[in-house]
Image 1 (tube, helix red, strand yellow):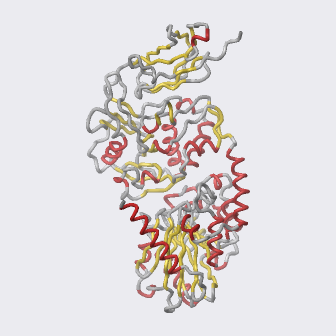
Image 2 (cartoon, rainbow, N blue to C red):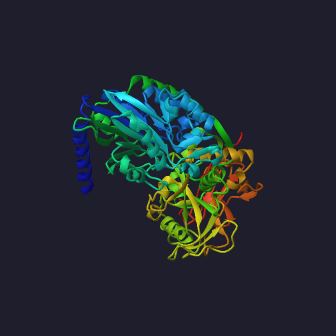
Length: 633
């Protein structure tokens, strides 16, 4: 009931703000529509804001349209065109200016310059220098791309832009060669000194700084503008930290819309009361826009349709071909990656580790590193056969950003204790009872974990790869790099212990990391290691071997043929025999196994720890069944 009341009053407040500050009145008012951290999620999927709707909002209010960075990377639309299609859509939508986020550097400096040159809007950057000159100096932009002045409704609006110095950590260092990032406060003061003689009516900063853990946050910057700089800056359109807020700090309004166009900012500069404008900012959802009668811009919508068709064709292109299935999705009613280590989970975590080590300087990675991927982010199996770009989206659909933090062994123990809290009641036969899945079940890379589900704590030991001594459970001093997606590392899914730990670096997105790693494995013939789970998560008190069974479903239609040819985990095919009921029996080590029967139509996944393949009295419901191929008459 309280939640419903909260949502009601939130909707009411938004409605009142829309009515109060956003009337269609341009006398003494300048409207500014703002976006940030779109990460190429600019097409309308399942009732979300797209650039056609953004363009409609701009036209509805006759507004300026600004972006605070990280626009051209993150979704297939960008990955398949190196961001070109995003720039084309921003052109169609009518953007007026954007700043550079750290991810605008992801395709290299030449591509960044191409994007800025092909944009019909201004790309601004005030604090990055190349060879001691402003970064965008050679692109024929006004004022060397450092600032711009927009004349709107009779008012002169000055705009400059800052990119976080943290980019030096969060972007592949090889792409930043010869670049120098100037301190944000120093650069802001320099720009205000430069703009002061222009007698502007308002000054806006497009800031890719955020409020989280950057060396200089937007709040830090606002607080630093004192003395001669007091009250000179009116509005900060912020980005980088993927958070939703409107703040007022030291007389400056700071607005950030979150990420991936979940919301859009509407900022109002009202010059009625005094020379200094009154600034009001609100964040609008998709539903807010519809309720306000905002219509998508037809031209932008048509271009979106064209790119969606182009994207869908490319998404069917093959990346690699797998000779077997990488299990991790649902099998026999169990979401595997939410309850156990899986081959797909091993690969997903290794892809994050690969991205970390290939995109970040080895000098920066001076501590041992581990990687995690939450099982709830792994939705289907991969393979067998062609793995396309579309397959990777079905596999990991959330397009999260990959980040890293410095943690201690104690924090690692706490994290994994939370991760595996639902593992209970391991029987003497080595099978978990009363399985309860969790989207926060962590797949891991760079370490091994030993669990005892029947005790507290459940995590008995953690070993880093290459080390024979377990980490100390109470060690708070040693530093270890923990890499994973921003959903988990921001403290979601119960991982609150990670929330307040500063981000060390933001280094990739999940899709790019996964696709790059698949291509790497293809070039190095490295897929066979993922035929089955690699034993990174193990259990105490497991039996040496377990009897597992497979049922031949159409056994009686095959003339009671007893002899078959079976392969376990890719080993050589050997004779195997079914009993009179069509049951094949195998003695296996506890864990997951891949069974192939030469005479059958498909491979079989077994997992003795989860009870898949385990015979429980006369109950055969957990015994996988296989169809034999039809025999020739």
